[in-house]
Length: 249
Ligand code: ADP
Image (cartoon, rainbow, N blue to C red; front, top):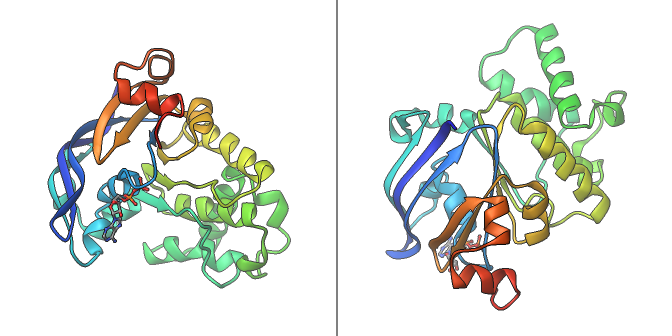
C-alpha cells in the first residue's frame, strides 16, 4: 500500500499550548482516511497541518515533519502544496461570483489560458462532483444562490479544478440536510478512485460508511489508527471503545 502522505512526530501549538501532540501516521493513496474524535480533540488542527494552512494563523506553530510523496512539504512552494493538497471547509464557501468564475479561478491562477480547455476542465470536474446536470444551463448565475448541498458540491468541484492529489475535508456534511449529505457521501466514494481523501467527521456512522482507515484522536493524541473493520469491530484501546460506545465525547 502506497503512503502518499507521511506525518512524523507532529506537534501543533496555539500560543505554545499543544493542540496535537507527537502524532505519527501515514495516509494511504486512493483511500478515505477518517479522523474522528470528540469536539476540540485536534481534528481540524491536524487537517490544517497537512497543507501548512495552520502556520498562517497568528500564534500557531508546528513541529515535526510531513512528507508528500516522499518530499518534505516545507521544500514544496506553498502554492504548489495547496494545489496538490486541497482543503474543503465545513460550511460551503463559494466565492460570491458566478458558478463559472468559481470553477475558472484556480485553473486560470495556475496558468490555463486556452478557453476551450478551460471549459472542458470545468465540465469534467462538475460532472465528477455530480453537479453538472443541475447547473450546466446556469453557469453564469451566482454560486451563492445554489442550495447548501449544491454549494458544497461546487466547492468540491472547485477544489478538483486544481488537480489535487489529496482532498482534505473538514466536516463537509455537518451543515447539510440528510439527502444532501448522502449525495456527498456517495460522491466521496466515487472520488477516492482518483484522489486520496482525508475526512474529518464527528459522525461515527459516516466514518463507518465511508472510511478505509480510521484515526481516533483524543486530547490531541492519536489513540488508535487502523483499518475500518478492525477499528470498529475490535478497538484496541479502552478510550476508543468508550468513544464508540458513547461514553465520551
Ligand atoms: P476539533 O476539530 O477536533 O474540534 P480543533 O482542532 O478545532 O478540534 O481544536 C483543538 C484545540 O485547539 C481545542 O482545544 C481548541 O480550543 C484549540 N484551538 C483551535 N483553534 C484555535 C485557535 N485559533 N487559537 C487557539 N486555540 C485554538
